[in-house]
Length: 332
Ligand SMILES: [Zn+2]
Image (tube, rainbow, N blue to C red):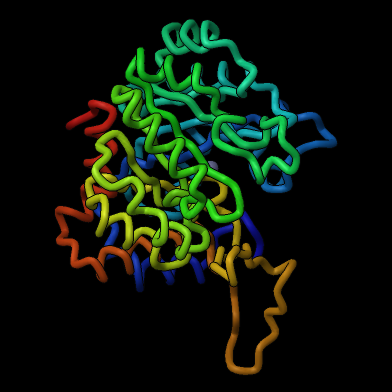
């Protein structure tokens, strides 16, 4: 069972568990496009090395149909953030790919060293609706310990407020939303910059659900914060967001191409682990253990969250497309 290759096992899992749950179309609030040649050959992430060399709209449409078959999908696209990627080339590629995609939107990569004027100019020229920051560009090492300010400067947040932009933020530090420094910055900026729209990726990086469950109350009452479900494959975090913030804050995201890896991220102790065939012994005596695609594990997790919080069909549709369409003014 390989990454990137969908099999009958995957199709059967979707038909059995997810086909009746996923609405007939999707707005995907977290999807990456990339060109492999925008990475130095010796520094290509394994995920990208194993996939198509160019992942533009055509490849996205073909491959996302393996995760959510028969569901026409528009998206909030952004490039694949990485230390070595050619940021300008990736932003330009995104701009070109979006030209024939009037119902999708794009967020540009914004390393912290990018000047606010460059962001302003690029957003206006390319019609981008937001920013994609990432911890890998933080000066702190390891970058996973970074405070938000170290990879998302306040000057970028000011531009977002000025232009009404969204920011997809994958918070780090070991306890994510349970970290008081993260909580304080998020609350302070969301209040100070009400026109900026903060999207906390991965259920506020709820890869260990207990971090989001512990910290979600710190954001209560804020109306310019959303949460995407991308790559969240363990129960509890999405539920706590629905209960405390409301289901209208939740945006479905595939995290394409992470959707095409096999495995699952589970909370363990006070951290989490991405289980894959390379770090886990799959030879078990009680059955035939095969890893499913992350995209399907993530849909299962959204389904359990909807069931356990008692969402009706229309509220499930809100998560899968209406909340995102509303956020970006894309109502059909
Ligand atoms: Zn992502």
